[in-house]
Length: 260
Image (cartoon, helix red, strand yellow):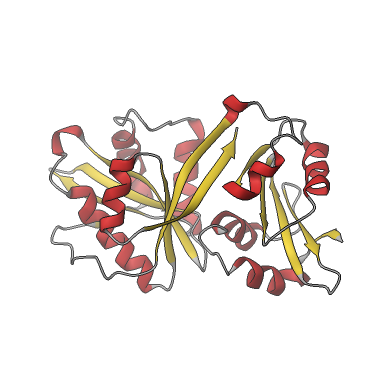
């Protein structure tokens, strides 16, 4: 049976999602921030014959994230997505979302697959030696200026607004190093919730690279977040970057697939 879930289901839902808090970072974060009863967010759940939750589907505007433990009703979830958009934005754990490819007639060029890694321990972390600080809203322009120098980053009109919103709602933070009053390296978290947080926006000005600045920032960030009882996670598609994160204690836990 599949039905719309409400705030009365929250305890069951969070217990279900909590087995994989990194993989379910976005669902958990969106539910904690916006709840079950808004015009832009909905959650459906599929239950077994004995009443146990076995799968969920989140809609956030036109984006969908399914999550399941074992088999689930792909056709019914697909019908829900198609009723909102013939070409929904779909993302999630690779082995789950790829089951929708033929059902939703997704074009191959829309598919992006990245590694998904998490860190649960500070065993591999050293104590940072540099004066790392946490950014405030008044520092947003500095963060945006630094990010704009990175070719791999895609910035748009909403990026600045989302950065401010994350700081205001405490769903994200940015750590940075500066020299002569100018940001030279920084890293951020996003989608922070009571269980997990994701690392994004790791960057260093080109003239300051190869000094381990980003690594220093990450060590401070990871220690702080782990000490709050949360798990850190991140996407990466560059094996070289992956090796750096693994030296800090991150481990691959699967692949994340997005259909744009």
